[in-house]
Image (cartoon, rainbow, N blue to C red; front, side, top):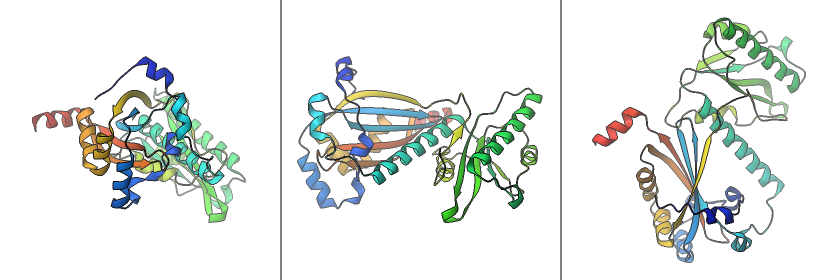
Length: 301
């Protein structure tokens, strides 16, 4: 990869809310508009490449880098509305949850959906969360008896009386205790569903999206202490106008670029967004880290 790790550039880079600033999906535009957009972008510009690794999931974010002088030209003309900011906050919270799940859980860990019978329905979300903690303590007691440490876990409480969504919980917890034993420990309802996690090429992103789709309450989700955190790294490069234009106009070049520059990873998908004011781009790519067998097969092709 054409990377310049200049310490000077690191010092002058200004942090900004690039996901909010680049808010127009390129695939919603007509071809003629995209052509015009590419013609108006006549400046070679420094970009930051940020990578995030969560388990075997690998994300790449490419966005323009600004210093103190030029950031003023490209700041949003006004602050986002309360609704837009709320949506962004929810999106970021969901993204963090997805990354934590992919970093900490894998095949055969448990997905448990905890419900309440009418007679055991708690009067509030806070009381319900106490019941979840009691349940986790019971699990950890059983784990201790067989020589296992306390389990890693993440849970989401979902509840919305306006939409007639009955209070319930989605709990992801690491393996170690028999499924029947786990089920017997929850005494508040009879419809306890326990399934082994089954990652696909996007890891556990599917179930993470499902359990975080619309949770209500003071916090979207809660977790045990000591979870592995996603690994974030940054590098710095210069994308010419010509190179950016080619990548935007021919999306296959993005996958080629990613597979070439990240050989131990496999391209999965991407999205491109742009800013109407500065005509610059934000590129987001999802990849997965190949296992040893996949890497060997690729070398033999």
